[in-house]
Amino acid sequence: MTWQKVIFVLLVLICLSPYGSPPLALAMGLAIALSIGNPFPELGGKPTKYLLQVSVVLLGFGMNLGAVVKAGKDGILFTIATIFGTLILGALVGKLLKVRAKTSTLISSGTAICGGSAIAAVAPAIDADKDEMSVSLGIVFVLNSVALFLFPLIGHALDLSQNQFGVWSAIAIHDTSSVVGASSVYGPEALAIATTVKLARALWIAPVALLFAFIYRDKDSTAKTKVAIPWFIFLFLGATVVRSYAPVTVMIPSVFDALVNVAKAGMTLTLFLIGASLTRETIRSVGVRPLLQGVALWIVISLVALVAVLRIL
Image (cartoon, rainbow, N blue to C red; front, side, top):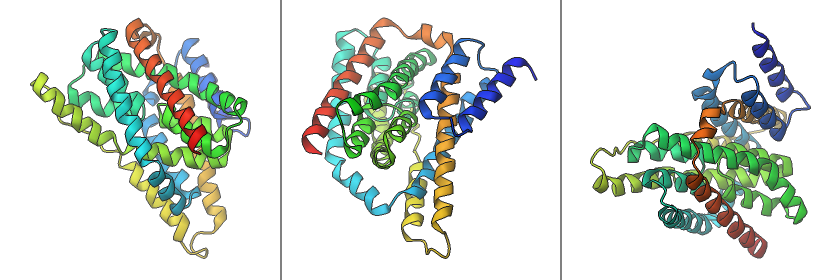
């Protein structure tokens, strides 16, 4: 085993230790990516994606179905407004900055719904090429990293309640992994609310991808209609059903707590692997205009969501 791999393994052990935390895990991942490089690049693709999904499903064992349904129902109108408002604003900003149409669509979709997952679903639907995906994913990655560290600080500075922070982070932070990371640092109630609201937003991946497939069908005859359905969200709901209704004799509370702890450890490791997957090529691929579009959309949606939670919640 090379010394790079030894360092990588040691950092993984730190992530899984009591000293590990989502921000620290992401920081260590970024550090190893930009210094010695990732000695296990094969872990940055599907393994990280599946680890994230399994961790989200296991988080369901720590939540009550009634609270999940209530959070999803209460925020549905705001979810619809922010998703389609972001998509419309993104199209306008993209045209203003003269960003390539498909790149603009991917950035807008990632900001509106759930970052890399939305981009991965919309890209084949509009037949986006590798460069367009790399630029969009790079921008989302950078903003996710900033949000994971910045949002808890802002939340405490504004004295947001856990309920307010959970809703705000779910709307304004792109990827589910960073939403869970930031909210878990803020508190258990914030984590439960943020996860629920974010996954409710993620259900819009399929409708939005189909919408763009229809739009680009007229513009580009090569556009495809392949859409990835986030099936793991339904497993998450199944886990909340088990937690809410399983007899104590079948599943004692300590078992649920153990599963949630495994989920949190898995999410921390996911953030480390995401950070370690960053490459210098990805950073160089992010142009100024697409980055400006991504930052502008992120700032607007963050401020709008913050004002809304302060007034409503």
